Amino acid sequence: MSGELSGFEEKFQLLLRRMRLLKDERQRLRQRLEEREAKIEEQQERLEGLEEKIKVLRMTSAPEDGYGADKEFRKEAQATINSYIKEIDNCIALLNQ
Image 1 (cartoon, helix red, strand yellow):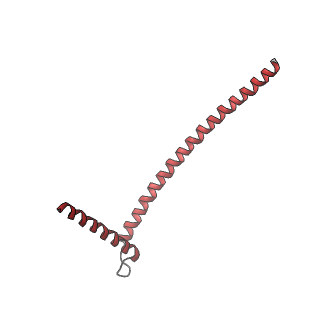
Image 2: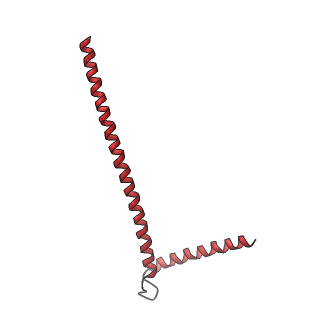
């Protein structure tokens, strides 16, 4: 019976070591995941900034044909500006009431 017990203890110790190794590995993987998620978030913010710069450059680019380099973008920008103006007018109307 003593032999069975020591065999059981050895297996138990092996399982405990394996569990500790797995816990350590899980912790390392979680840390790597957090680092990667932070890097992704940083890259997304950078991408948004670059997209904003592209919009500004499109709006301020020199006209090639008298209408500007990107007619569709200018139409979209004008529509956005018009919607903002309408929203501001609505707010002013509400304040005057």
